[in-house]
Image 1 (cartoon, helix red, strand yellow):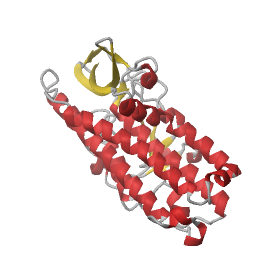
Image 2 (cartoon, one colour):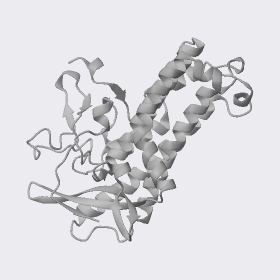
Image 3 (cartoon, one colour):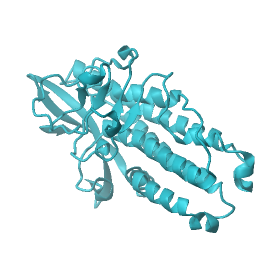
Length: 324
């Protein structure tokens, strides 16, 4: 099987190379490449890594809050639902805001290579960059703007899923707007009002990081004609991937983020790092309980590559009930 067709390779060990390509070329930028406003602040590599660290920390905190809910409800499906969701809700909001801020940070780095906005917008490289960024930022930007400017509230949702005679709660949320004293799913953020899987939100953030990095990398390469430095590890990103893979992998819609940007997880290290014991997580998988592959397919072991485990493009799970 040709791994080149699988998409971007992700590692969860801190000593493996980062897939964030932007830093490889950012490290080659020199002061003479920058204009006055960009020279006065952090260097581009420092600004980029600071932004990546912030978004990874917020998303990791969301993973930890979500894992706590999974553990509690697996231990006691009937009574394990937390009485308070305030930390979980706050973690969702902070992760979304950090992702939106990362988009702004990347745009500022790109703009620092030009003397003014007019010259930036005339650049053919910027036209390509802007198109790529417009496509990747849409889901997160919509959520962040609606929460901030329309005072949407995050409503935690848990959907019941049964397999092998056992009950499991799959956690997500809705963004609701109050109209005529009624709380309704926000159609701008949700489309048809579907519940958003908390796992899907984190994947949206991971893929936003990857796509912003790709766009900034290509923009700088075309603008400054710099060569890449050697790939380096990025501990905040690999820590986020570990936290994400500890969660059950599922989606409530069929066209999730992994449909739009293919990734696969490849690591020959210690799988104990991602061992949460939760059914559906990276190490545990969904087992043989899900016989219809399009429903709930998440992980597929590929024999030809030994320890390589490919993340499939289907994370969709049908659920029978909801609790909020």
